[in-house]
Image (cartoon, rainbow, N blue to C red; front, side, top):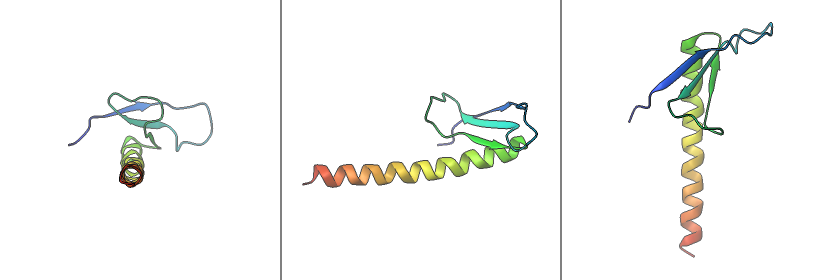
Length: 71
């Protein structure tokens, strides 16, 4: 299932331009993955990378929980 991605042009008052764009999934809540980049496309790519790591972490947590329940 493809989740809807929301992009915002943040343009923080710092000289570094790699944080100009922020990408989150629709329905973002604190603690959810966020992507950043100097362009909208970079922010989306970063978010997708963050999400892949988050999914892997969730799978690891689920496996640990299942192993604990099976004891």
